[in-house]
Amino acid sequence: MNKTVFEISKMDCPSEENLIRMKLDGIPEVKNLDFDIAKRKLTVFHNGQADQIEKSIDELKLGGKKISTEQTHETDFDEKTSQKRLLWIVLAINFAFFIIEMTTGLISKSMGLVADSLDMLADSFVYGISLFAVGGTLIKKKRIAKLAGYFQITLAIIGFVEVLRRFFGADRLPDFSTMIIVSIFALIANGLCLYILQKSKSKEEAHMKASMIFTSNDVIINLGVITAGVLVNWLNSNKPDLIIGTIVFVLVIQGAFRILKLGK
Image (cartoon, rainbow, N blue to C red; front, side, top):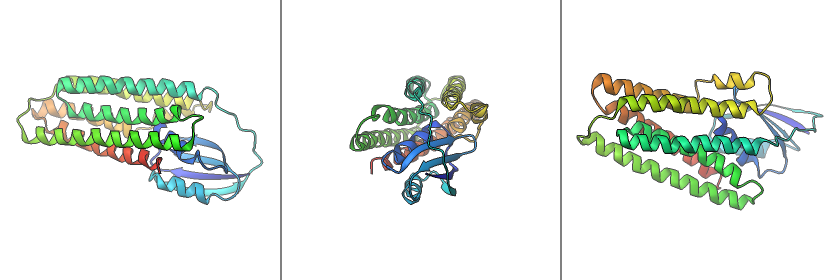
């Protein structure tokens, strides 16, 4: 048995962890995966060489880099029996906030909230693929990934078109207070999801360290929408909201392409 350690610089939250799990699922040499989101490290226990594993991680474009490979006598891996239940919890949280942010975004005329709702939907897709493809064939998993990826891209493109319409039109200002309040709750929800999944790993204080990561895309997006809400009120302009909406739509499309890579 070999143990290979990777540094995954863009592994900011549990959705990236699940992308990696799904990507490596079809490699028979892989025996166990140990994630440390706080340190952005992945330890892969496997038989044989790590070439195929390294190639698969590189294809996800998450900044994966092999650090070391060494032999290990560890063969008794603790299976996470509660992982499926926890995935259902974070899926429910993310999908609920997709609905909340999409609804409040449309009502308050905020493209930042609409875009952030799609980011929540993207995470829901990742958790959903992990759940619904459990025990299924690799072909089934790839089909689900393709459908989710293309659907996500379609929604993001529609969002871009709406941003352009509002940028050149004379739409009323978005409700800045709704933007700020809903984004604060979304920020709490993202932290809760990270806390739940990290706590399941039973590593002392690891979940607390991970929950304090403020370089996570999800956290940055939430803070970005809050900042945009403040600027909308201060400048009396909808441009900050449209700018943050555009940035998030770009991130959503990038996430969609990562999901599509699972379908290859």
